[in-house]
Length: 120
Image (cartoon, rainbow, N blue to C red; front, side, top):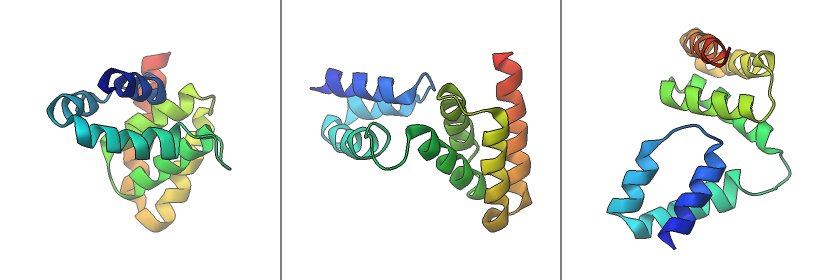
């Protein structure tokens, strides 16, 4: 079951790296199964009312507003991998500046520039 859950996380991550999941799976398999239920089955792996790209753009905005650089990178990469344009990712960051402030926007823009440069 653990290997199936790891595969589900890998598929859902869309190539964005997060080694914490591997550590959790190894150290606390029971918790990892619950986390998979929420993260994969209940949110990002589920076809709900919102398309996955939209969910990732929402997460970009939230992580910018909360000043979470790891989350900004992770969800920006995923949104781009799902076909979002850099302009769409930027707009999610701009919207987040209303509740979160300019530091989140600056961090997000710098992160987006780095990702775009890395991807070519």
